[in-house]
Length: 346
Ligand code: NAD
Ligand code: GLY
Image (cartoon, rainbow, N blue to C red; front, side, top):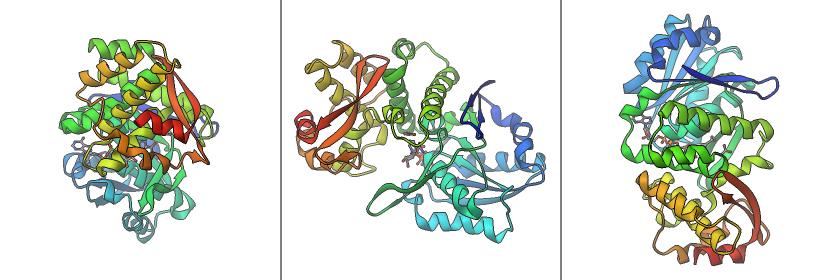
């Protein structure tokens, strides 16, 4: 079993990673759930696959399990779903010592995290991520959110979990498209912080548990330095500014988030290399990595996305901070003008 600790003073927590980890679920959960009420939040795809196992672990560890199952998909990051989770907690007499477990991908993780942070002014939260994206990214670092019609993730909090349990066996049931989404984030970590991981990914010579641990370690380190996203944490947005514009242009759901991020990473690096801010060959390397993991590297009609880029919430006046890579493994933030960004997508 691999493990690591996220060291945020006063709110340290462990991440455990293993194929078949759920077999040790009761043992790992016991310190957090014995004698407690536990709301297992999941979605309509994940609960039928793993809900019974996790509920059994909770009961075996001496907890009393309740479940909330929301519809699979981004639409469940809603006020309505938040109300269902928080009401389950209140109606079943939970106290602040009790626990919400988020069992699923980033949607359930973000929703469960937000619910845990606000109900009773905070109950304990355990993340059990089951998509590759949530295992390498969203379950770690404490960002929680739901969406509103005005925009994605506009209602949210920072709230760290008490533990993260990653059973890589869950990836066996994950659809290909979702695996590719996680791979895009993994390539992002290699590009901004881990040259060696990029080499392994290019060779295809790695254990997924080791890759997940690497990504969680990079994210943990960044979050330890900048939990509230005022500086270094921005590096995690590499490929995302253009990626969001691409997603927005094609309509959310048409193109996967991972595909959009891959297009974003390639487009921005092609430009930064052209203008001399990135070592030559880096664009080609990132492009080859994306191709290897079945991710697109460009989109038609990029020139029509200038409007979407201008609406980015990270924009401040005529300037926006984007993330570039100097070379593989070395990401850095760069303030550029909105006009320059228009030029990039053109
Ligand atoms: P998701 O939660 O929608 O999961 C993708 C699909 O896979 C869903 O249909 C789900 O039911 C299904 N699924 C999950 N695990 C499965 C399994 N093991 N087997 C079969 N099917 C499974 O999407 P996601 O990509 O995990 O997360 C995306 C969300 O995460 C977005 O809302 C995004 O905003 C958020 N996010 C948050 C952070 C953060 O730091 N909090 C970071 C990145 C992304
Ligand atoms: N995925 C972006 C962040 O956690 O900051």
